[in-house]
Amino acid sequence: TRERDKGIVAIGTTVQVVYDYESEQSIPLPEDWRNTLTSFEPGLANTPN
Image (cartoon, rainbow, N blue to C red):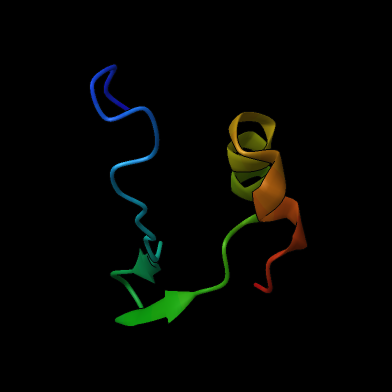
């Protein structure tokens, strides 16, 4: 937000990918990483792996 706009000016989304270079493929997000992320963004706890 900006004071002059009096509200939200943009909303965005991201996709996080964990990549295993040894197997050359993406892998599920490790549980400890998910826990760390959800401690900052609690709404992420309800998203699929």
